Amino acid sequence: MKSIRSYFSEIVFNLIVFSLTLTILISCGGAEQANESADITSEINVSPTPTPSGPSQEQIEEMAIESILIVKVYKGFEFDSQRNVAINLQFSNTQNEHDIAIYTDMDQDTKTPINLIERGHITSSNRYRGVLTVATEFSTLYIVRNEQLSSLIEIPISQSNTLSYYFEE
Image 1 (cartoon, rainbow, N blue to C red):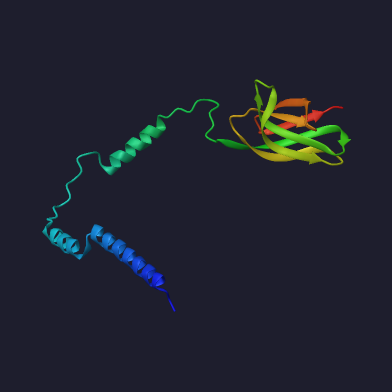
Image 2: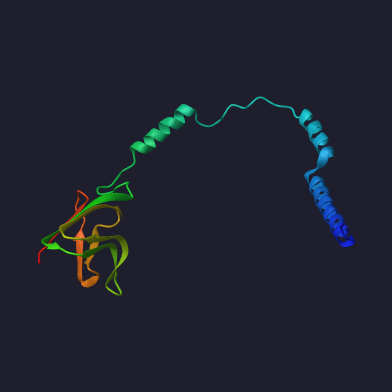
């Protein structure tokens, strides 16, 4: 059996829902406004579409072609924002448990590499190979071996998008 308090709670809840629903219906305009808009719509006179006073579609296309033809792309400019760089690091001796870290930038204040893009591990091999996606703005990458900054090497990316280096030990 429900208590008076639960009946009262249900009544209050139903009143709140009813009030909100009524408020939403009134704010949306209800049926009266729908009839008014139907009357207004029937009174609108549609006039024929005026002919455009600007250039024709053919003229617009000709102007677009002309603007493309006069664009000058300066030597060395590339539209690409990224490129794949082939990494080829070779060692004179077989490396056992050797770590490689590749960075894109150097912090000029601390002289430490920043923006790590690859961390690799060599086990019983004399080479490290891979392909990295690198932003075209970078012309060199920084290699750190075994997390020792003293082994930092700056290597330029070639025109053929390769980064090669031979470590003599």
